[in-house]
Image (cartoon, rainbow, N blue to C red):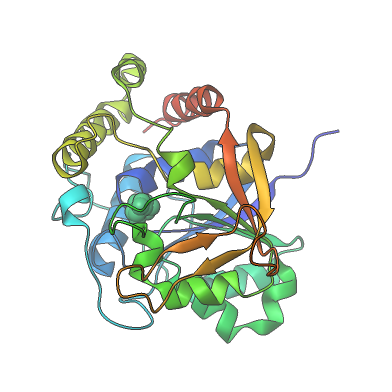
Length: 314
Ligand code: RIB
Ligand code: CA
């Protein structure tokens, strides 16, 4: 029996891996992508929003509403990841001018409207800092029962990236992450322990180049920029494609192994602020508040990701 597609909202900070998450979400028949919302993270809000509008124009995804969200974290200022994503937050190719009109609603307003009106509970997929999601949960407690799940790319069971023990999305807004992880809602988390297994290798580049479509001819240079940035910054010539994994957790959960465990967000540590403290062995006797990915069928992901790029024409 075919299940009805799951209504999802993708909250992102495009971002090279974010745009690949957009493609996978739009392509996945298990999902109904209701909206894309943007949040300051990889770049300032105006840049990541322009990137979402221009990339969706390129990919022919003009039918998906796009709304702009938070300009900065709940506490403190923005920190663009220009080392990884460049000045535009999506360097590597000249994207077409946008033909999509940005929603008049804010990200939180659009999220709330979709969730309130949806006949079925909505899943939020978050591939950037959790500022918008935290504001939604805080401002709309009446909608919590209409949220099916929150699927997050962030943190990890081992080391960090932006800080030695903190991953960028969580580090950017730890207060927001704490609100989300304390919400009591269903949370699925894919961290660096998983996404660092999902590497754009020369073989993946060849598969992308062999598609040879209007879209793939722009995806390849984007990913080449991303690879060079990762090589220069982290000495990783094969970059991890983080964000589409948060989409895959919703569309194909059977490809994962999850551990239902306590996850705490460090907000105060001098050297550890932004860390996800994941209690894999239950030593803290605290509530199990998240399903944390600890295994993934990586080849199956790549087959779906390549199919998504090939299937979505200009
Ligand atoms: O740490 C990786 C995450 O931070 C990804 O979502 C990437 O796009 C950046 O937002
Ligand atoms: Ca991102």
